[in-house]
Image 1 (cartoon, rainbow, N blue to C red):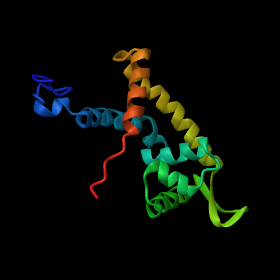
Image 2 (spheres, rainbow, N blue to C red; image 1 turned 180 degrees about the vertical axis):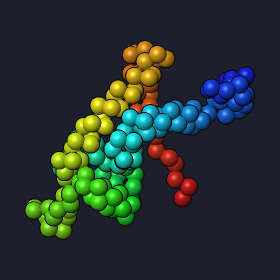
Image 3 (cartoon, rainbow, N blue to C red; image 1 turned 30 degrees about the vertical axis):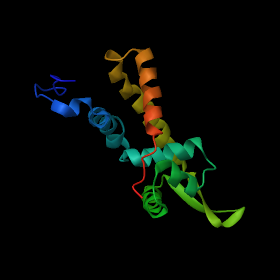
Image 4 (cartoon, rainbow, N blue to C red; image 1 turned 90 degrees about the vertical axis):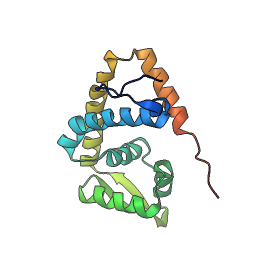
Length: 157
């Protein structure tokens, strides 16, 4: 995309204009700002926290191991996030009655209210893209982003 300028400026982008990661980073900056305005200010949670809550909401029987894999987290990292969510009274950890060695992670009533309210607020905030992308284009973009998110990074081993 030679001769292309950075959004909201007159700066030439140079060679980075054709990089997928660069374009994604621009969109991430916009979606982060939308998240802060629609969710973070009201619920005091981060995007990763909402992601964990939504995964638990959609998959109430998910194990911590499954959640860690879905989030590409290590178990110690996930435990730190669970600690934060439990401190905010959004989740509750209990021993799995079927397997005492494992934990069951449950949304609290407050956690359910936060995840439902956040989802509604984000769906409304997403409408900012309606002026630039038709419904068909939005669906195509979601499909393409889903494909891109499933790319496996080659290991350097």
